[in-house]
Image 1: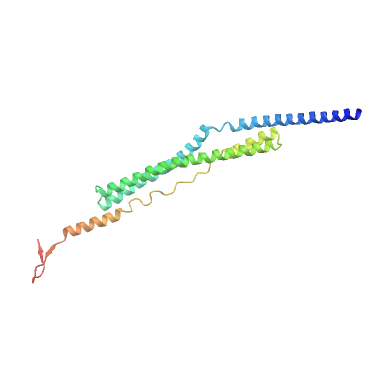
Image 2 (image 1 turned 90 degrees about the vertical axis):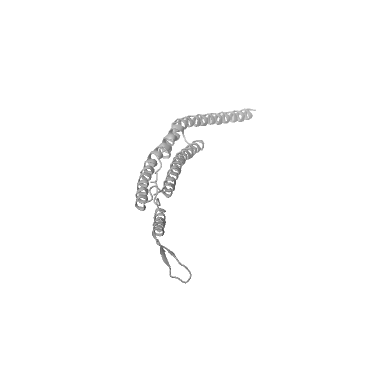
Amino acid sequence: MCGLNRGAGAASAAANQAAEAEAARQRNINAGMQTIDQTFSQYGDDFFKGVANDYTNFALPQLDDQYNEARKTLAYKLADAGTSNSSAAGDQLARLERTYGGQKLQVLDDAQSYAGQVRSNLNSARAGVTSDLLSGGSAAQAQAAAARAAQSSAATPQFSPLAQIFQNVGSAVGTAKAANQNERILSQAPIYKVGAGSSGRVVG
């Protein structure tokens, strides 16, 4: 009988020990999750809007500079071709404006892509730190790891400079100039009238 009592007592002690260990594990996880939440909570929508704004502030001045230079180049080419007031000039300017407007939208899209990239990096970092905590890491380790991972993942991406967007501006101006020259030559050329049995003569 005594042996049974000792066995029951040992089992009860083991169960109590396991329960205490699980309770300690849960306290550690709760403490660790609290520090992880606090660390990553600073990266909300306003932060990601800031990342997007950083890119637009980086890219739009470049786009505007390229556009202004392109307008000057196109104006010079049109003046040189003598077609500044032609319908072809209007088409060229309209094409330039469409390209500029489309590229502004592209810059805004790219800004959101950069912000999404940072958001994804932070989500991955948080998931990794949480996994380590659940696998047995301490709350203190989770706090330190979260701080390192968040700082690294939240870094502003390396923005790439814009490519030359308007490098072909006015490429059709030369064709228009040649066409205008041909029209002038034809309009100034003498007209010959040829009759049967006679040589051609200029009709004045």
